Structures are given as structure tokens and as C-alpha cells.
Image (cartoon, rainbow, N blue to C red; front, side, top):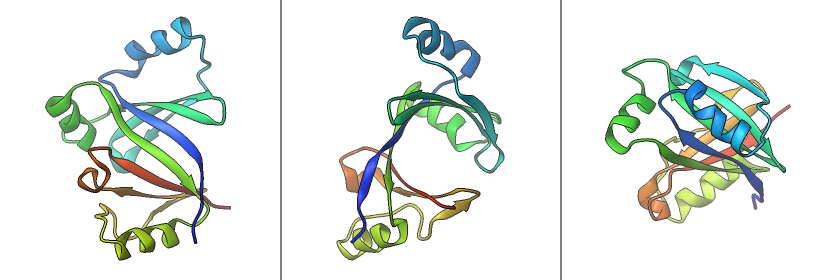
Length: 135
């Protein structure tokens, strides 16, 4: 059976990373680890470690992106919670077998990681990302 290992990150939707960063870095004293562009999702993500987890500020890079639509519909704020697992496929199969709704039928694979999302209708309104670190 798949195990949950930790909260990997909390994703926060923002219009502009540069405008959002001062609260986290100057106000809270968090250190910016790095910023990366995620072309597949038409977004830019800033990673701010806290303990074993990260706060991720996510901003759209295109008006037709999912994040841009989210910001229009819901505004800035917590977008998703990400939990890390040791077996994403096993966890996804367990959830499907129990009747929970997934957004991804198979994990999205990127260098060093696999990820998939559970639909908010199955979680009480929270977009949940499942995440596995790969080698």
C-alpha cells in the first residue's frame, strides 16, 4: 500500500510573482530557492522552502492558461495542497478503486518527479496534488 510521506508544498495562485514575493521574503524572512517556468502549464513558479516543505507561488505566463482562468474565477490565494507519496500509481489505483475522482488518469512524468491531481469534488473542495520523487 502506498504511503504518504509529507506535505511537499502548498501552491498559492498569484497574478505576479515579483509583486507577491516581498511578503514571503521580507515579511516572513523566507528564502527564495529558485523560480522556474513550467511551459506545459503556461506558468512560472517560485519555490520558498519552509521546513521539509515549500510554499510555491504560481503565476500564469499566458492569458489562456489554467492558472489565468483560475485567477479570474477565484482570485489569488491557496490553489492546491501537494502530498508526497512513495507510490503514486498505487495511491491513484487505491483512490480510483474506492470511487474517488482523479483529474489525471495516469501520472504526468517530468524529470525527477511524477504528479497527478485529485478532483476537489472528492476531497471536500481542495485540489490535491499527488507527487512522487523519481530518480
